[in-house]
Length: 393
Length: 211
Image 1 (cartoon, rainbow over the protein chains, first blue to last red):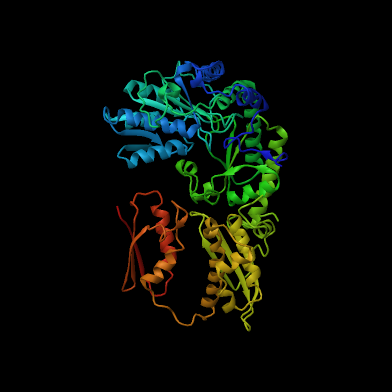
Image 2: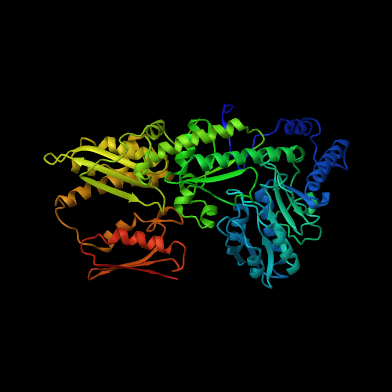
């Protein structure tokens, strides 16, 4: 039904790769036992081995040991586990202060807020106009009772890539745990925990053409983490619940399929999109950093028009994108990311995110730029804010 | 496939009627503000003898429901007398469109307010405002319902951002529940002043921010 749709919302979710489905299939129909049955029968042993292979492969992509990788149901659970786990483990021993930034995605932002309501002190760091957290601000914010710093690797909306190196070093020097949400960078940008002093990393399968509902948390050996979901002793006793082996295997396959060449191809498509849109369409603003940027992300404000109108008009022309406009969100709140980089409501109102993936081509990119140029021209023609002399009808 | 919008909303969104400006309009209005979200401008042409709306046009800086409501309401109002057009409610406009999602009420109500404000503008210019209503706290509150809280996109009364309103000797005193150094303090202050200052018996508007 959506075969003709040109999908440019790959940061929200991706089409599953056929190779991923093929890798998962045996664990749905043949080897369907769970890993905890390894001492009972041979199908359980096989299941356990498949889970271990997937774990080792996903961990290796981060430069980690297999036993440092915990499977979860996705980024939301991973970040909840990291923040709440550390809070549980260290509140009594060390303190109740957390540091994060205004631009974090909801799993971190709202988990921090929930802890805030339970008596934790949360410092929300400001960012600069391009979305960068100043490592010095992290250093200044660290107090004696700080138990965790959580700063994302790259932003979900504007794609700004943080200086993790500096932030991680500061945390290590100060003896504070450091977590990063790498949902949008895992396998797309290098992140090596054998050289980067990060203690926890959130990753997910849904952004890399893997299954939805599977993710992971890298947990450096020795990191104190309270268990907040009780049940069995799966995942090194960190995450109770039946292992989803087909999804774990699919996630590992999805990660394997992401190559540097592919990422470079996507990056050059993205550059083409940005270059064309910003030069050919008047009254536009790039949101985020030009170079410290997620390779698959473009985010542009088209002034004098509203984002939901743009996305609906694009949908009618067969393109799927997203916007930071308040009208688009369930909460009627404008994007906290665009507001966080010092944008006003007007900037959020007309912001559009394009996120590219494996199946996008140059034809898609040229098509969406042509389509959005037309849509924006039409909507500006009826906008009271567009200078009259520039309207084309 | 169930879109959150009716076919009629989508049709009016795609092909909005009566868009654009009217040269030398007899009445006009601008509702909403780019600082808070959607914005609508309405222009009217009125037959001076019959008081019938000869032409109604609108411009929108808004989402689909805002554009569709602007389109339908200009169609509904055209050919009606001012007093009949004033009575068109958001509910009627919404029904005419085959319904709007509740979440979108906020975006579409602006178009209805825009039409009423354009008619009021005409009436004020032509000395047709019969009896001037004295300002009361309730009148002020009603006007403040048009000031949007940028934090939520909802109005400042509904989101309980207004802590206190007093009106004495032509002076309106409003206390907003926001720290004075809040990022939206200036925007909200300007919006409130813009809505309250035009009231005929108001000489001064003082807006304070509570900690």
